[in-house]
Amino acid sequence: MNGSLYRSIRSSDLEAARNARFAADFFEFDRPKPAGDWRIRHCLPIDTEAYCAVVTPWKAYVEGTSGWLPVRDDPFDGLPEAYEAVGLPTPDPLTLDAWHDDFRIIEQERVIPPLVRTALDRFSGDADVVSSAVITAMTFTTGRSTGYSSSNYPIRSWRCRSRLAPSRSSHVAHPWFMLNRDDEPILYLAGRAELVSALDRLAPGSVVGLQPNDRYY
Image 1 (tube, rainbow, N blue to C red):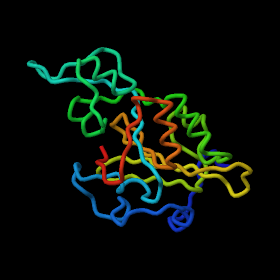
Image 2 (image 1 turned 90 degrees about the vertical axis):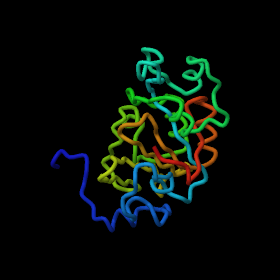
Image 3 (image 1 turned 120 degrees about the horizontal axis):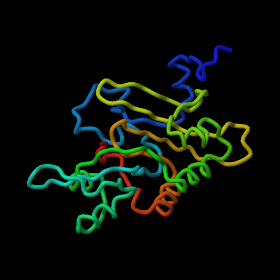
């Protein structure tokens, strides 16, 4: 034992462990793109049923006569409350594009709403690739390699995690994939449509539905 949580694996082993399909222009396969050209399909599997963004605490700024001004001192947990604070109607549909057009956004402490963690756990069955404690700590690290991938990319920092059930599991698990930027208050998720619907129901105002060709911020 060397005390490490990790064990080295070959890239071929990692590819063999993947059970998802990726686009031909997935970021690991294709050349770097200009910042505004990134799409969800470049970052997450393309054979899942649904995609969404979970908003984590953020501070909102709006442009005033003297520059960008904070909407309030405390961070927001979701999006509708920020629109209410500045006296604007929440866009319908609510999209990441509209949110980024309307506010200057500063990431705060990245905390997953407890009910969102509960939903992720429920859809994971007996999977032990990522534990609830790890998700709570927001470290997104794991000592196992099955179903896990992580890459450092020259333009952006990526953390992509999947949670899968071992074959011996007695409970049904549905793979879901999580990706986060290191400077945006967003967690990107791909998985079953039922999971995305559950997240939207449990964290209203903090979940934004996505499509594979939507912009990745």
